[in-house]
Length: 464
Image (cartoon, rainbow, N blue to C red; front, top):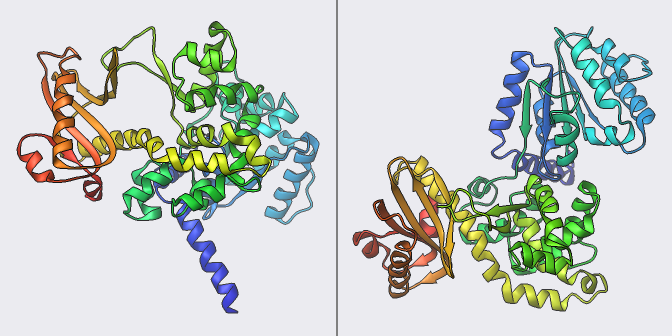
């Protein structure tokens, strides 16, 4: 084999392996359903999250068909599906519809049929969901076929396939929402350079396709991938909204407002020039998509006046640094955007690090390195704020944590901890057992601070 061919194969194998890091749980769930004889399994999740790679991996050792729906119309997809079935059985087959195709397939023994991007089929032929209801109810019952319907349009999958009013409601033997990788899952991709990993997490949100493009997390790499008009990630944020939503421009403006720090309903409404009473409907859609979430102080289970934050770090980065400068970048004048990025990216990562710190604390709990806490969130009141509060309401135990994306001297760390103790008295948990913590990039004299009873962690502790 020529060396260049061998190199290509090696690169391809590495990419494939990287894509399946930490997808063991998903593969096991699919395998369990297969062994159990489940006839219908639903897989969905945001675009680029790795659903197709997951499903192809699942099919590797099985007899089956992988079929990717097109946007070329229902009749064309029936024709294409006929071709795929013909290839599998080495027979000249042509079906008039999917119902006829599955009537043939159920006679062929144990088989997996994956229909990917099912929403394209719904868009082309609205009654198709009812067609598949009949296939599942009448044709697949007592058969050895496992049908997997997959889609990237989260809204359409939840509305047309999974909702109470959908024809297929209650018929799936398994439902899987494939999510981006968590921060600590990404160690298997990039290794244990956690400062680099925070930077990468802050722009990719653990989405595999983006992780393949952002490998080092350097300023120059991020600039090349986001601030050049021909770069894949330059238009990605807008395209995702266009594929998912009917009014992408309005939704994009709402996300941009939040990304720029306008977190209250009135502030967002003013930015997008909308009546505040009309805004909650849009925010609910963005919340359902996992892009935006509403936050209230963690000690208040219900609060009339919460704030809105961007949960998805890719969207947060895109609408903070790219979208406000979109026209300038497109006009080949990216310098203002790049200057904004270089000046403010480190401050932006402060919020990213808060999410990472929460995941780190949960890992410590699971590893039994600290006591159990069951509720997590931020707290704020009248200008005072605590980055992370972990509660165990049954045992009346609380951990207050400040999170700083900084290198701290012992003196500064001590000052932050003492101020944290002061702020904790404002929370109102007077008869609770209290602990105080600090999660930072790096801190001097960590052992001495711990010896005094403070809970102090930096990136070095992430390696354990």
